Image 1 (cartoon, rainbow, N blue to C red):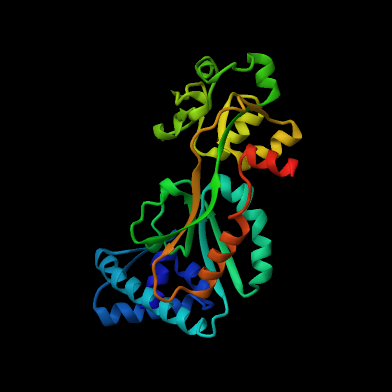
Image 2: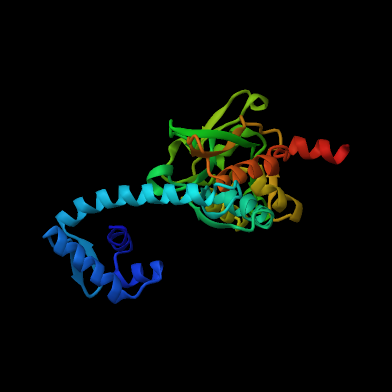
Length: 303
């Protein structure tokens, strides 16, 4: 039954065999025995792979539930001594993952040599338990799972920025309202993220970013801004290094929108796996006190 669940998930007997360290013929024989026992054909076989029949799909749901319980039992046994070990499956927003998480991972992996990290970068909404993730890193507003535990990692401020080439070509906006005359870079498919709030220093003004370019993630917008396409609103942690190198210019430094929290989500379990606990604690230590806005950087420089 465990083999059958793996074959369905892999969509191929040979791929499942490689994953389990068996030969395709051995896996195929086990599936045949299972079908004989059930008196139903459970898989449709073709040149490109296999897919479950209707009876096979119903049977797979039961097998998957059993496989999940088996994995939980296996993880419990492996972690009885409290040492972090095993595969740690993480999902993280694209921008934070590239700019902050990946550079920090070597430290975590050196400190936890028995943990294998599997990282997915995406800005889509994920289901921790259904997709088998141990932890998810995202903005606080994205954490909609009521059953997940939430821990704050750091505060994130946003800034406006543009490449010198764009400002030379189109000029620098004199105030927040003047942004309506500029090519503002938009996040596609998310109108809420295209409402730019000026904050207290801009008298609470709001505009909707309008322009000739949109991208599906902050990372796309970041690269478009560097290329000189337009003015972007980005997290400070993405723009800071480019301000230092001169590839981006800080536009309207007085712009001060409300900041947001970056959090880590993990399933609420009475006995949290040591690998997950170690990772969450690492994130809090690594980023909790990190300055993440221009005022913090100025204060540190003048200390």
